[in-house]
Image 1 (tube, rainbow, N blue to C red):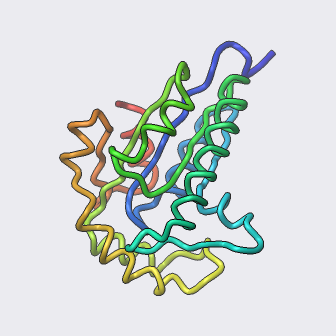
Image 2: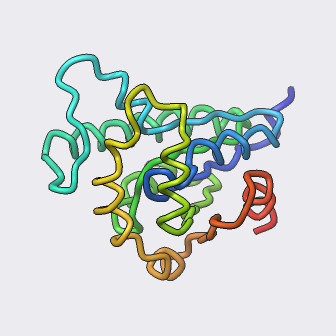
Length: 180
């Protein structure tokens, strides 16, 4: 049966807002026969009352909801990867905040990727986005707070694939990920 020959890889794709996580995830998965994209933002959007939004002061309720979304993503990723799907989970993550997610995926092939465009490229990509239901300019203060804390060297030291996508097209980015 197609897609049943072995588990698919779970790709964990991170970067700051506007880095292209969702766009790259979808383009990457289109290169495979079976692919599932799990955007943590989309899982959080399923909360219809009591939704807590991320901010730089890490409100406890927002942290709890993100932890729940990570558990749900890991559950779905395992289910689909074991059925032969390639899976991409995308969220803003740090090497120190991914341990529970990786533990939930134990035994599955995983690839951890940091998309690291420069800040001006991320701002331009954020301004051009059409995949959000809100004004993406509202993300600029969060971007200004998050981007300085994303240190590509820390990710590389932790074993992540780090890719500066500032000068790459979408297809070049996917080609680079697949050539690693």
